[in-house]
Image (cartoon, rainbow, N blue to C red; front, side, top):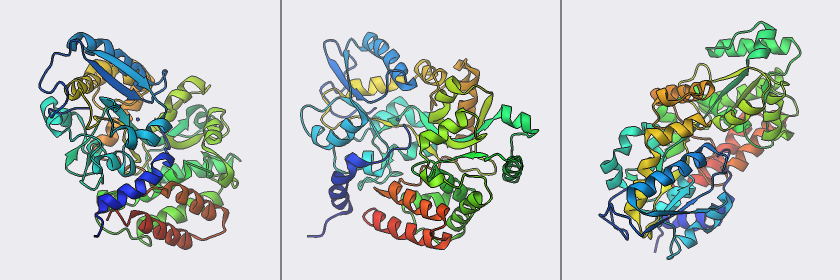
Length: 439
């Protein structure tokens, strides 16, 4: 008997779920559970799993939500902190037992939340989304990672999770270095290139970058996005149509990235540099520009000894980014309605403000509640991307293992061991292999 796409995906995902690479850090419905239809949780316990560090914006916010929830419901919250790896490796086994939690943080994407959705391990929470109005609080590009098809492909019609924070990739600028060089922060791509040239002329390598891991692949994808539209993103990420790996978007990205190295915008040894080293080179002032994620924001705020700012990539309406991780409700949760009530509290202005004032990117905050100037700048940038429907996810998402493929192929490109056309052909071959079961 021929296997369905979901069955083929399940077989593959079981072997890859525990090794998925994450470049960054990130609950509701009215159907069946132990307390279905009840708002009185007296004497009941909501078991919650998450893997956020105690000092993270999300953990601070969720910890603040617990006493509110307990007062409103009469129930008790039992938090079981797990590592990311623990949840990734054991979820598919534990969620099919009575040991399943009532509510769980889980990574968004086809091979993670999508896999759990396709195998029936997490609940369809569409009724709760409608009841609590969470759909009205989430921009379309945020909803994409929360909704899946029956085969587990994101962007479907069924809600399987709810995010309450977001993330994106932008451009960090060292304002002190710009002032010393007599330069202004660019607002167009031509101005961006002119700034890169100006720093090179002063003997400064302008872009902090890493090719041994992320974010070189993120820069490559951002360059493609400058030539792309939403339909190309849908093809690349959601398998709407085949991706043309010799088309304008990919060709421009690979050729321009190689030019960046050849022109001295990026260090010649970038292929051996790791993300931590790139971030530190921005923190210590070695390189004045860093294209990477909002997850660096809090660290730069505490460690960078200079004035800096973050903007969306100039000249592009599309930016890398997505919702944060999802609240998902296991199908075997004994307290689904309590789980939905907890999710709703984490979506409230009070809890969203805690995320925002601690360096996170809330999805439904009232910006008037954000008191920290730097945090408000971060959130305003994110909201501007949402207003453009600009979140375009990440280049490695379409297929398990594609992150490693990107790293390897782009290393070949920037070291000169292969040209742009060969790089694109190799990427296309691996992409087609990795997405065959999704299409």
